[in-house]
Length: 394
Image (cartoon, rainbow, N blue to C red):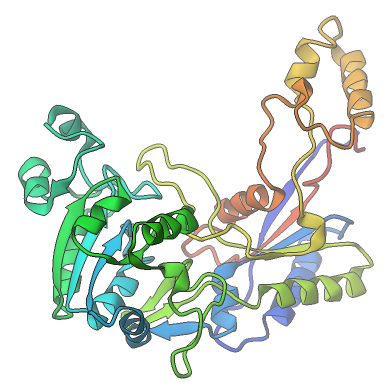
């Protein structure tokens, strides 16, 4: 009897640098891991490659000066409102540096008590005891009087202080406003750069309808400035700090990469292997309350076999209801037969209640993100076997 379901392996590769042949590195690392670990490739195995090494290998970088120039091109007034940035040194500080370098004044509106991905900005217990609520508009002076210089428990940094110092270091004036209504920015400026990630289209549309001259981060560096990199689909969204003057953009050549890796692996193994590029998964830290989700999508590129949603029945529901009088091997065999006979599309049926209604690439991307981590594991490739199996597969 088969005793193991899904198996996930982090695959070590050489350190990947700009202009490396990533497809060859990935395939060679997988074949080396096969020999080292003694596994065999199977149909519907999944190879996942972190977006970080895809962006690095394709050399898709921009500088702070590139950001400054593009923002200045779009906002010649050099006085703008910036709304709902995430509070992240890695994700946003270098972008903000570029914005400040190109502007004379920024009114920076941030949500509270946390940003879009859960980074805290104040003590929530103090908020509950204060005169303010989630519908309030709070000035920087009122913020400091009520919440002091609150420091994040993980980083030990107050991001308002950090962002103020960064902006002013570029000889740019800054005014902070705290509000959960994006329209608040129109009381200060009608030239607006929106920085929210997953509500970006809705926000820019709303502000345009209110008469603002508005662009989103997804519309900055969609084309090169000189010989810079760019991302036609996501602009600066999904970018990461490379150096104090350089950003690595979200990858733009992922489609070609996943299909090339898939072709090579099929040729080598004879198996139908699926391939994807993954960024941030979706999971919430129970202590820091931080979601991942700082990338505009979990998977910017994947092969066709990874399109769609799971089509699973809930074993507990079937066991407790349809087969409540069965136990042991008899129960197991009955459930296996139920799985074999399930409809090709179970959408809306009670038998799926409690399963996870997320697209496959989001689920798999979360699994990969947790496996590879964000530090020094050295496994930018994740190899998954048995993901599409169920209890009826022997």
